[in-house]
Image (cartoon, rainbow, N blue to C red; front, side):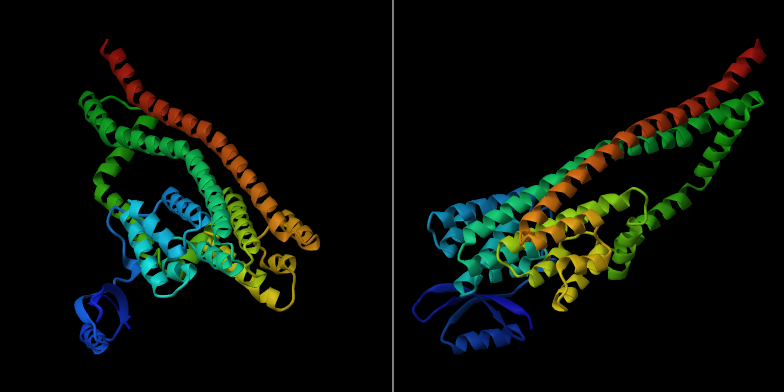
Length: 400
């Protein structure tokens, strides 16, 4: 049933806003007028999953800052609704501002803060709403949000380090592709006509390069079409669940990416699970939320069986062992945490260890990739330059 945002004037003369579910606008208007309210406006509410103002998105630092200010006001003794209203006034991001306004309306209607933010889990995460729920149940909402802030900062910093480490090799690869394309597509054809005028006998490497350049020029539109297909097909299937699982499973079969993806998944899963357990969420509910935090959907799908194992009376160690998603070292650390009744603390240790190992693996990979790419670019450029200029030297020798 669609929802409608309504502006009303009550019998007491107050102007209020409310969200009403009704089969149609006419039915919504009739039901409101039957309560004695005067309807100022009615508009259909957009589904938030499709609501994306162009050019705007919620950045992690903005969301962290919002929660830091919210925690400061809650600790100062302000009620939840008043805290949301004060924080909402200084928010500049239109998307985040709209979310907070909607949350305010839900809290005014009697819902809890976790219930107010639950429709927007696609933009934040289920970890956030679970942390809010745990804080509300324990009576320590500022503390629970504070733990989430620390969690979000660590995750954000790890992702930033990974992106920064991979930036330079990516730029080198792009530069090498552009350089080779310019040489093959523009430079070589000009020299081909020059050599043809002299009728010189070309070296075999030069003939191969000329043939390759001629082939590319003659089939450029087919190559562009193939590149577009390679780009468009994955984009069109990116929301297909089977394709996502197939793609993520394929990533785990690649030589270097498997260890990077697995270390990242272990760190995220352990950190999320530890956060939720510290906040007071039960282990059974926590493993479901922690599984959703893993970016690789194939691993996330395998981790769904952990909850079923716990229901059958198995330990967390045994349930994770059956999935095959965790390395033995992480499983041994989790088993120690269960045995010592310090599972949240040990999960934090697991997350820190695998975060550090992930950074080391990426740094090692980058240090290996950089010289390989540089040497490759140098060899290709040298081979092309020699193939281009060797015939010129032969022509000069013949003309003399």
